[in-house]
Image (cartoon, rainbow, N blue to C red; front, side):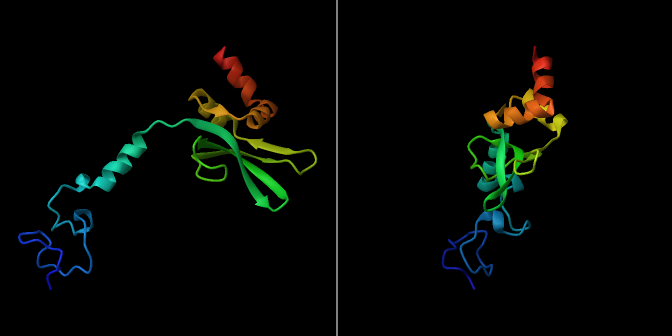
Length: 139
């Protein structure tokens, strides 16, 4: 059955398609364009190449009224608890004394690559020793 959307001479003419289909969704044998020509793939590749402003910040975890935080490297435009690039450490303010676990190697790598920590994360980095190492290396 020929779809009603198929113009005469179309590469999809004669195929049994249930809906309008883009070239990228067709099987490889029928595709007229090379695999990289799909607009969606081009947009995705362009997005990967973009440079983003990265921040080291806290991401809230835990239950209601019982917060724990992850220290994450995230795009500055992403929401607080949204997408992040990498987990750098964790922070539990409710324990006595508060528990700060930070992977200093990851934190230093992000700081050297230009990530800006928030005020609270900077204090946590100072407590873990990563900030002093970064400041000493940059001077």
